[in-house]
Image (cartoon, rainbow, N blue to C red; front, side):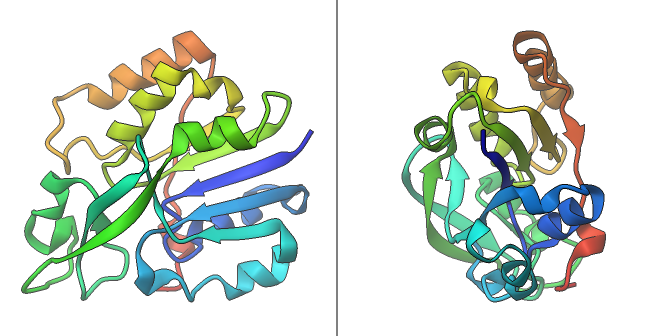
Length: 198
């Protein structure tokens, strides 16, 4: 059995720092961090020093298919980025930090559901964290459809219903399916206090 932490929406490594802070057995895990924003790719040195060969930074986004997708980014705030067009087209890319123009980049994405099933077994212990600024509305339904949640032992997520113009109750709808079909209780995730970029 392998222990895996899948850090989707890795930002500047803040989620791994929080994971280390909250788990005494953190050194037992292999960490896969997925972060599409190139501004943030140089901020993982402390994590690489801790995990060494048990850490991999994937410089791609996660989605429900393998593709190139438009990534919306606030150039004045490293943390503000999304593949969701509703959130991305909001003023400042949905952040509190001013910018005159939201940048649009073409970024590679992987099908997270397929990637999990192709790389791991149900005997592995997998902790999945999704904080992907609206991308969860593509990833979660695909994982439900493919039954990929049967690979997952613990699931952390930050939902973005309001930011992405989703109907009231959207996150509750998916949460209930995950609980009823896969017996997983989704746990709210926020690692902002562990950021190095502010």
